[in-house]
Amino acid sequence: MAGRTCFRCGKPDHFANLCDEYWDARDKGIPFVPPPPLQVRSGRTMATGAEKRSHSADNYGSRRETDEMNNIMRTYFFEMAKEREEAKQRAAREEAQRKEEAARKEQEKERLQELEEKKRAEDERDVCLLRMIREEIRHDSGKENESASRAKRTVVKRNERGETVEEEKERLRREIALREEAEEDAELILLRRRATGLEINKKRKRGKEAAVGDSPPMTTPTKGQRTVLGTTSKLRIEELRECGHMGSTSSPIAEPVGKIGVSIKHVTAGTGPGARAKYEEEIRTLYEALMVDELKDA
Image (cartoon, rainbow, N blue to C red; front, side, top):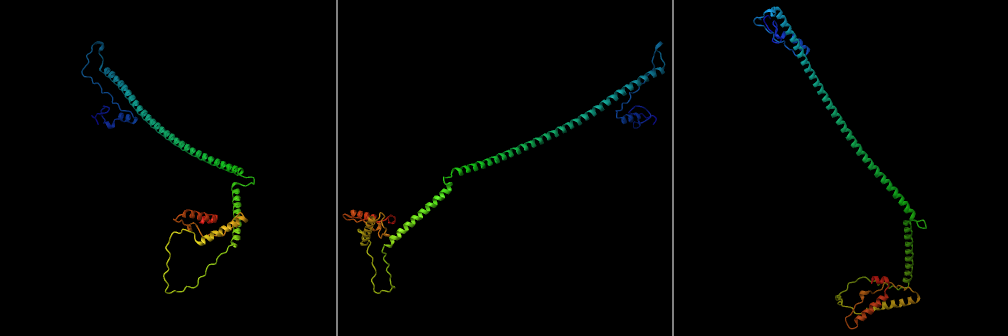
């Protein structure tokens, strides 16, 4: 390798890949600073008297100054590289701390959100429980008030016999029913007594039907307006008057004689002179002869 010069350190007789100074700096983690180039003197120095010095003395002094300068430069560049490395490490530490602080803040924020949601859920549950408790208390108080009012009503509504309103109504209903039954029984007995004195005509029994030959067709009289009562109706009215007169002399209660055979539809008005007065007289006679039930049926 004679004649070869390292382009890193500038020294002869080796290549850059075999430079010890470069690899030492690299292993230590510091930048490699090449030494400054050597100053080559050209020509001779003309000095006279005391300024004359030997060539060996000049070479030694210049070499010494160069070594000191190289050491100073090496120290400076080493300090600069060290400061840059420390700055990088400090920046990395600050970045890590910043990331850690951001992660911690994010975790704290999530924790606060979870606590807030949990507190909100607890508040809603408490509100629901309070509502249920209020409704239960209101329901219980309503039941108590209802039972108390029912007890008061039960105590207040009892009469002197110790009966409630419903019991008293039931008792009065039974008494009224018994009285009505007794009255109906008495009226039925009275009607039966009166019915025994009545003469009931037996119905005419018809014989067997037989064919009739050469009989003319039956004709009905033309319907006209009746102006007077029939003979049967007049007889019936007279009978009722007599019975009513006899009953009034013996008892204040008129004896009923059964259903009357005539009603208001059998009384008709005429068109001749004096028909109006006659019609009013017949109506008055009919109404005086009828009982209350018969008046309803008339």
